[in-house]
Length: 184
Image 1: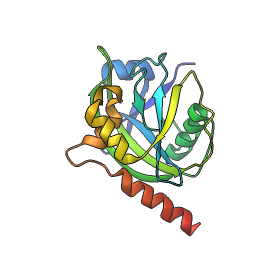
Image 2: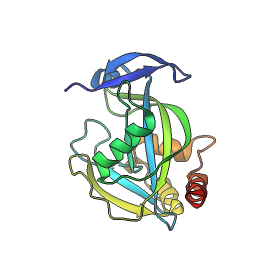
Image 3: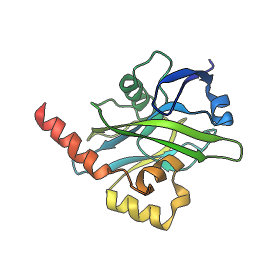
Image 4: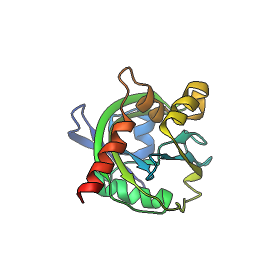
């Protein structure tokens, strides 16, 4: 099955659809999501992308990423992909969005309007080896230290989240998730 992505403008308005591989070859702006799962200790679940992935293979990234399908709700898509990649589901809350443009291989470009979601999970992931080589839980300070010493081991979108001129704030996402859980 050919996977279709939602093409968007810089305001996240849908402007069309495109075949996933071609969208990445063309570098077209498209809708995406990134999921950040914390445990009760505030550690972030990272995944190492499987070596079979067509770009960013073997690099470390956030818990999971993906693209909503045409007609699919972004939050539902994020939960679907979390289950497909990491083998579990949990409540997610939106924590922001940003646009980034990055060369991810010699001939592929990620140009995404990336919606960010966060959640809490304290179990053991049952990752899909076709998607994820391995995973680990890390404190945010340790992630920042690893990025400073070895940035080439991380995906471009993950680096952008932690290194933008005005970096996004995963520490605040952890607080937002805890507050939401306390209200439930």
